Length: 74
Image (cartoon, rainbow, N blue to C red; front, side):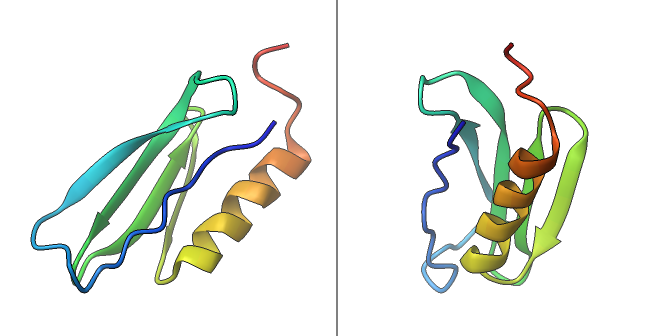
């Protein structure tokens, strides 16, 4: 499974925003929250949550979650 994580430049964000995260087939798998001064929060599969400063940390969190859980769609 692969989850697309859009790269957001927090310098240009004026308010708290969020995006739905989807897998490669377009199925919803979580939310991505971001905001200037708020950082970035990734919430996956209704139970895995992490708050980070950089896009790379968010990507690493997603990859780590996917590495240790069985596919929730199998």
